[in-house]
Length: 480
Ligand code: BGP
Image 1 (cartoon, protein in one colour):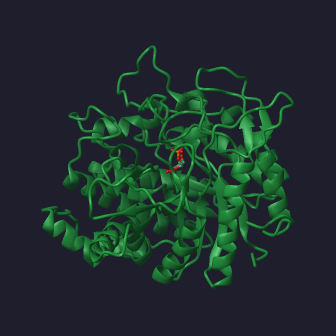
Image 2 (cartoon, protein in one colour):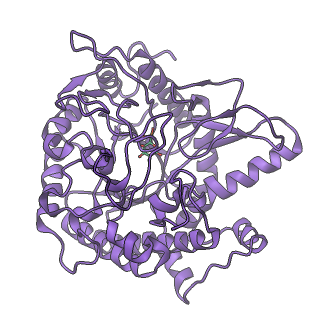
């Protein structure tokens, strides 16, 4: 059921694993200014670094010094692909330099060489919530068109440098995060002076959608340039797909679910796959007095920069209801109404493997291009036993059920090119900034109080995933 060339693997992001802050000529990034938090304590964005605060992105899980060991483990599991991101500020420390930082380029050369040693293809996200700090400070990120050129300069530099080492690229991680206020900072590089709580930022929708337009252009230009540099490149979009169900069969709920689906899940993919703004957003902009300023050839650029494949993250589904006072559920981006038929993770994310099959069909029907699930996994508070084992059967159960549904979608005729679970290795959580919320198949000895020496331990899920890959998706006890 899974084709022989299926891209099995795992996904990471530099700001969550790398560390090596300011080493090798790296500049300051937006994520380096986010404090640690937890399920109950919100992360904060502090333009001025506070002496007593902890900034987890500066340390990650020290992949910068452990990459050989980590990639070796991925090789041992039989990975065909390793998704990672390049830190823009390692290549252009402020984003404004004319010449790239050779030490930064060399670091990724070494990482990619290490991947190829084990027959692993790197899949590289150009920007995973990680803009150079100066571009935010000087321009409010993509609010200013100047930043499009900064991004394209960076993209061309890495495309040229790694044209023989990297075939698969993604432009912006979870670009549709820019459709909601929370995405102001991480996707667009906007932090309004009136914001007091980073998780509920002061939001100017007209500015946000204008900046998102500039991100679309940056992505499209990068795709077009990439294809010139190497016509064999496969460059994809990356959407956070939070699958939405109407809470009940009331027509009002159906309409609301459709409207929210369009605005959050569909809009960015439509632009990046089809190369034009969809009709329903034109209407939304009209009704909300949002006027996107376009330069004469913007529309043509969007057409020229269409992506080769559609990738997305899938962790959960949510319900939407036109009625108030219903119990809510948590999510990485969107909170929704609780679905009585689903269980939730320790962090309140609703677990819905069948929703993944539904989503794959929906997306293939919409786009008719290859799909790839580039994030899917379970954050849990794992326990390292005295004998060094980690018995994460709950993670195996989560992954197994989702992989089963991918198999079902493949059988149903959907073109799925690969699956990179989140994440081969424990890393800093993006929403809560903590290490306690572990996703890895490999445990990292480090906690949120700074204890631990970054030693790596294989979890039970490590051996299980290895057997899944070895058996081409049908490991022996594979009954969900
Ligand atoms: C996605 C991000 C990832 C990752 C994941 C899990 O939204 O692309 O960077 O972190 O969610 O979320 P979290 O780390 O908040 O649990």
